[in-house]
Image (cartoon, rainbow, N blue to C red; front, side):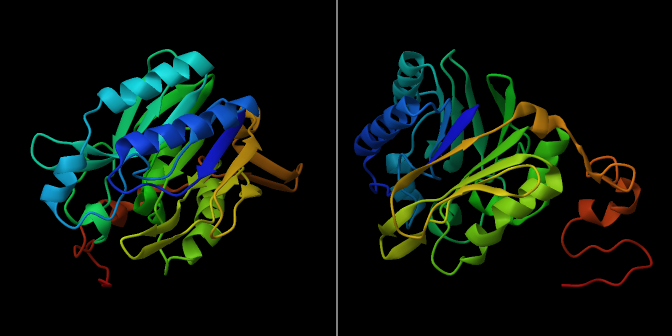
Length: 285
């Protein structure tokens, strides 16, 4: 299957204008054979909101008019898209990524790890870590931006059977190490395809640094973008490779299995809240 990552600028507060951009870029990617087209975090709404009241004014419902417009596009073109948006909550908002398919599938994931920047300063925490949809035979897991700077969210998706993890993101200036390394490491350590799709441009004085990247389950870069240009990345992904968890670099001499080789009985500290320490160990801040 061919997938596409659309590294693009975003129109702040202009859902209609951003939907037009998604429509145009999806059509272009589909003409080039892509069956899944991934857009950045908050690609329908913009990200740098300064108050909850401001974010609530732009927040969308899921499902709602915007997702219905994209569902119609997916039906017409016979493809799937992943977009980011600010979603209206019963109280407040969520930072959400939505996978929409040609058959009516709508899978939404609400960002579970929130940094103190942009709309995340005022958004509600999502409370479901594992959200997986399908594109053809591929199982596609969703994370958003900061989630993937921590190893646990992608690992949970991999353990739940994701073949590809899609990461719509808004990496800003100062986070240059992330586009350079995160997609490769998360792909390799989990044995999955990983697509990190960042935006470019400047929003309310905050520059975004591009560097979108698609990696295979061995951590090899299949496609990458520079720091400033709008572009579409393409990569062919192989279901057999995504599900072949044993890596035999030299048969009978070197063999790795990144699921089976884990020692979860030793990982008790991972489940403790911050500041708590297992008995007999020394706490680190």
